[in-house]
Length: 177
Ligand SMILES: [Zn+2]
Image (cartoon, rainbow, N blue to C red; front, side, top):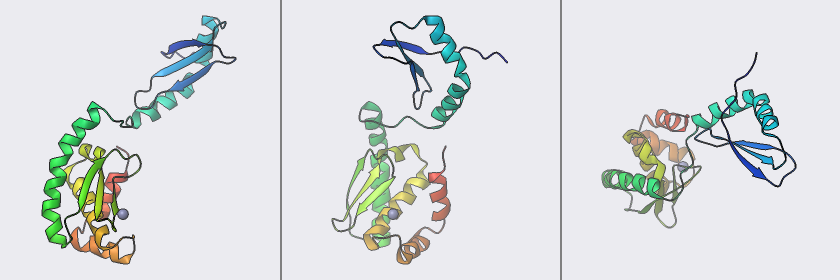
């Protein structure tokens, strides 16, 4: 079966071998090739990789672009701040914890964290893209760490008491969208 030519952007470099990357988030194909490699050889090389490219693109598009500091992150921060503030106003008295220092940060592998000795909690800016009940789950989770620093039976008992459906929220939050 003849495969179609995937679109790509080409950069010429001082290098020995042709190389290719598929960008996360966008699926854009970038090829770097040595100055002397003929265009048709590059094309046929790329064409020979079209199945690999298609698989990588599907993977790349399923995963959102990692957030970096800038206007997009600032916009998410502005959106999330009042939501978290309101949730803290509601949950701090309900759980009987001291009102913590809190902040929003770009976090790459977690939704939130808690420093129970400093009584401070941090939330991922990317929670702005999640529905309200999942932001609430993360807020309750981090506040529960002010009472129980580890994920032990005492911690789960708090979660069961304050937010009974938390297990469903956790799997919803951690499943890829
Ligand atoms: Zn935790």
